[in-house]
Image 1 (cartoon, each protein chain N blue to C red):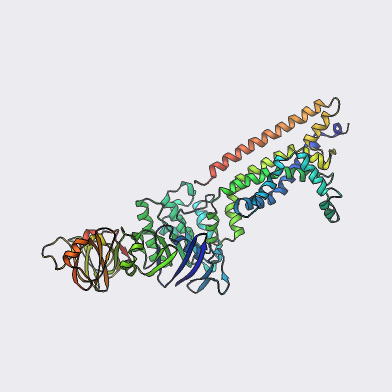
Image 2: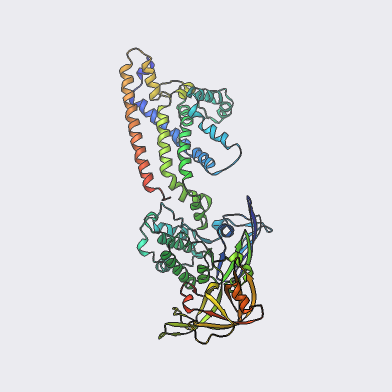
Length: 230
Length: 362
């Protein structure tokens, strides 16, 4: 009966917290990754491309298991981080990490696509006007890819809210710590008489998904309106 | 003073450019793909040469031997691209302010109000680049580059994507800049009309090499460069001064050291310098001045070169004073008149051939 005890609002709150931090932590590395994929040419680029997209095609359980092996208490990375006070195992931060890894390809893809549509000569123009590389990125490129970045963030946020396989494998199903919406629904379906609660939480999931879709549509439309003429 | 000596290789394309001139307006002239744009990219610091140096005024922007390679943002070189490249997310005002804000106040020497007035940007300030016509965009791009107070303005075929009317409009604005702001300009073009109108000094670029560098009159007068300057565009350029306007006949008298040229009235004051381009195919030759003729201009000179072009035509180069006039006539006429180097001849040029497209205000 462990799942039934958790309060619905706490579950929603935890899910939003996990999804928020998974997206927030993904944005800087996703920007860097999308930049490298969109702008650089180097041998073995397809390997990086494949690695980024792997979570999209792998069974989520495999990703979760991989994280467990690497970052578990006895994993090579986990043992390295433990003395620094950083630990993911069976913590909500681990749930956020699992969700971040699963949503990463969606974020990178969206950013990369909009980066590729930005004329690099606009950055060159900014440089000749006195802007450093960073300033040109911050004042020209970033505003131009904003609609794409926002769409990607929304997609990976939605993906994070729905994350199940990697999370449950990596950090288990602990109420109040790692039990997000899908995990709670799963919990209810595993106990007799839990269908009503499962249905209620499912309805919440549908509502959140609808809001996310509407927001993404709105962003895409705004993005089209502002896109530079070819 | 612009001093360029660079070498670079990009894939199969090799560039070797060398020229130096104190002229305020330098034209890089050559066919598309000849390497003009690579040269200006290297000047702006957007392309790094393998070796050589780039100096503008007192400043060394690039010197491979001394290990100097200033990044674009520290070169203070304005760049006007062929297709304007305005920032689409900013208004016209935002575009204009972009470079101005990044220029330390001590280094600003261009006044925003003056630029806005000169380029007629006032009514456009709150518009977005998407809502501008091609000509308007190009004007904003020029203004944006100027407001960063550059030590040199690069213009890479700024008229190429415009229609004829807009071309004339922007060309007039560039002339105003040159005269009002006294900013050195490197102007890239494959149009000899633009070069004649704007530039004092011309650098001829072909197949990744700078093949000639000199005054426009000098370079265009060299028959040996014709394969590069182009068959259709063959002709010479004469530096003149306005002697007088005859308003009764609607003609302007231009004096140069080989004589006088009568052209349809130009709007320059007596004493001002004017460059006139005389196309080879508009010049006829005679051994004696024709007694009754409609030709307004009959100029005596000496044949200095005869160079066959493809087909039945030859280009005969005539020295008229220190100026050069090239005439394109048929091979059979040349034989009949026995036009050889050293022979005296008269160049006949119709006044209407020297219309305002052929006349530049230096």
